[in-house]
Length: 199
Ligand code: SAH
Figure 1: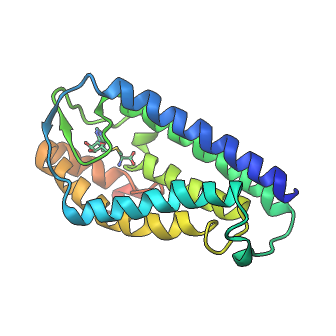
Figure 2 (figure 1 turned 180 degrees about the vertical axis):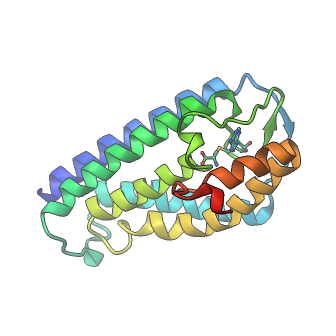
Figure 3 (figure 1 turned 90 degrees about the vertical axis):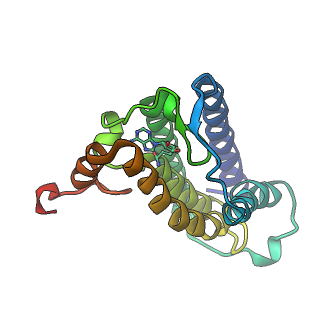
């Protein structure tokens, strides 16, 4: 797959993913927040890094030659693999948004009519949306062959993921108590648990 085609595929996937995000963000607005304000300064800094890594740098790479000095060479088939991985990321992203419905929020929040979602993809993993983000990051590295702009997603998302997931799970435990605790024993974070009863 040529460099131009890889960039076009990336851009199409990028537009689809952001369209899904904005569509569902609009829907969730109707469900008021009751637990708010968990956005600390550290989280704002991490969020800023994520925006650079998942939004700014890949677009700069697609539209300008500024980072061409950091290009890497991968075999042609990696472009096709990246296309498949991006497709899986989009499918999982869409599905987790439809399953989570109005309980979605960009930062850690509990909404007015918050329910614990344990069905759909959430019956297998607790963080399918973040799993979709990991797939998206892998797709970016496979489609944009660049040490800076290809890897920027994975590098910028890792600290945010490590910081946020324990806090989110604690918030869910505080809110849903035993129900979430039981849910945790059945599910993995981003990979399904194959032997759930061994916990
Ligand atoms: N971590 C999840 C959700 C990301 S959206 C995922 O990766 O799919 C973040 C918001 O989702 C959090 O503020 C929390 O309020 C809500 N949330 C997370 N898991 C949930 C669940 N199982 N049921 C309902 N809401 C959930």
